[in-house]
Length: 233
Image 1 (cartoon, one colour):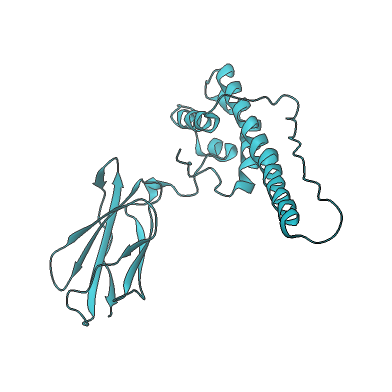
Image 2 (image 1 turned 180 degrees about the horizontal axis):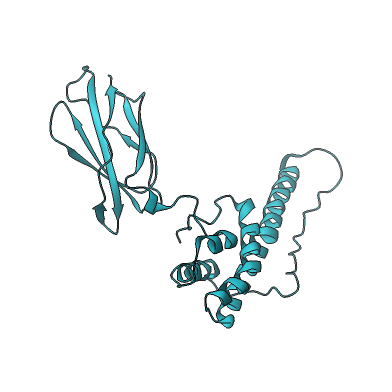
């Protein structure tokens, strides 16, 4: 499932976001005419996700590290005392927090999308909920990218680092040797490495690049400006 641009990427921040969202959602939903029962279901989803991410996963990871250390001691440690293997004790949910059906985060994102379409929605309300994205795709007409020549096996490789601003991917083209623009393809994850051989072996060449957004199998939007880089043998 694709994470939304308002949802924190660092795992350490996700639990706090979910708890804040759960605390602010009932009032916001009421102000925009969303039924209280529907909002309550999503609050329950958010609190369960916050518990799993904030309390369960850190304990599981600590237990895994402790078990690995104990196993290493059993196999190759020193000393005369017997090694006691750790025992995992799962935490209990806080009062009022209960297990939820699979897909809780998806249901949260779906309600957020609905809230943003409600007549009473305003950016100030979205900011209070924490659902205003860090990067708003509508504010970016084209991708942003950089090019850099790096050492390769037979010649330099051009690395393209790009920002797609919430779009599915980027469509890339390149021109070299005074020729026409030719497609490089579509990429959904930065960076992209152009590893094509030189047009003439042992002869440096200038390569030009441009990009546009790509969504649902179709290139869209304007082309970026042209970026140039010299590729050497």
